[in-house]
Image (cartoon, rainbow, N blue to C red; front, side):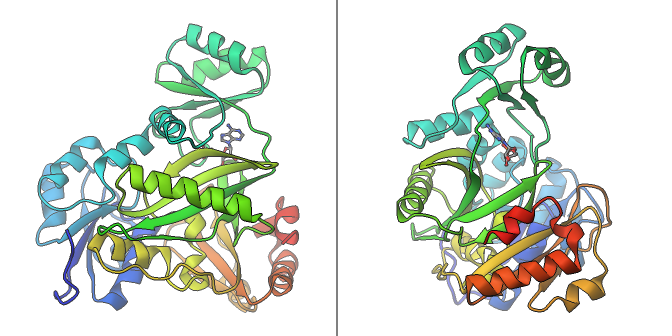
Length: 384
Ligand code: AMP
């Protein structure tokens, strides 16, 4: 449903009140939007900015309070219970659509969907029993990655299988839930594409981004992805368009891919705004957050062109002294208002520079001023 541009202050109901929700609100306020969030955690970061309903995601009374007077519902994480999505869909427009959410929630359905659209993926097999596992590993060979089909994120619910002795411990840890075994891809780099489609079918694509993970968690994104051939860029965009159209998608969709030589293999998609798109806040004409809101309201989308060469560095586990971070020339510092905890995303820093050399200079300064932020990623951030 299109939202008239002349309507006053529409309220957006958001499932989840984490940093993604918080950044959605920050992008929506200049457009006159209002927000209400639902999150089980009373300390959820979006609650610092807008009304927060503290309830479980499938608490129907809580969901009623969330959507009272709201125009549209959206979410900032993909593990929304199907019951909640169904309940909301009967009452107001919910974007992205429920079937996109269901596909993205299940790694098997997701990879099957990629394949059906001619989007290459690492070879995979469904694993429900020990026999399935031994059969799958015979077919795919070592190394391989065993993953839970559902609820895995940031590398959780995964085991790398290097040889037969890894099978029993991996099965002991993950067996009993539906699993997928994937061929391990010795990728050159990881890329992501953020794509946006509005209620009216308008599409904009951000340039592909290069991502660096450590311990399964995104640490650094470089945008646009350095030295990406036109052919690879076009393939990324083509895959994104196929998915948006097939899913009749509305909102921001993130697709994560492995590059191996001239091959591109899709790993997964996220039906929401994405950490690898945080650079767009300062680094693109229109941020992913603003475009997500425009898309779900049926408003014209904003341009996704980059404003320069960008790097986004996640602040994970604990924060550097704020005075040091703010003293970094050119640094845009974002803090999410979360208590430090190992592995937790607490904020990010973005640099946007007019030249590649300028960005390399900023990252070199970061290496010497705050080395802990980029330790283990030197090749990453110096190679730009
Ligand atoms: P995922 O939860 O699927 O995004 O996996 C988290 C990270 O684990 C990815 O960003 C990759 O760095 C790594 N990974 C996942 N699947 C594979 C695979 N099939 N081959 C190699 N690395 C993988």
